[in-house]
Length: 208
Image (tube, rainbow, N blue to C red):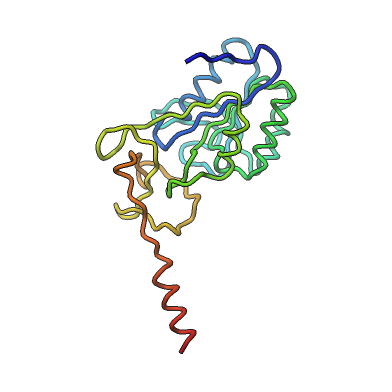
């Protein structure tokens, strides 16, 4: 594959894939390379991601790099002054404004590297990720190893007591191996639609 980075100006890179595919590790690797080259770097991460350390991006393998936790995507602009390379970890957890933030930074000449889940536990597009992918100059979609068959995993399976989580559950639920597995297309199991039966019962009660 031939890949040409822009010779000048800013650009957006997106690293995506399911959980356990190495997205944060790849983000850390790219940021460290830029740091070694003498560039000023900073990683912003959503404050809700406190699985390991709110002040660091930490990969599942234990690699870490200092980060700044922010509440809303717009706040990223206020913490990256003087930086040349900006990383955005767990981009799917941010509000839709993260797209405009990335575009603003790239238009100002910065290199923006966003990492995140491209699909949620239902295997549906996750938050602002589809637009980030469409706007980026460079996209890398990583694969994990399926926890069931060992094949190429592209999906994230959320589990509740070892079974697929209900389809109607909250989209955002921070967790790791205790609540999620990487699955291939064949091993992925859609969760039950728990809303179907209560809805039918409600209609029955309304008729009575």
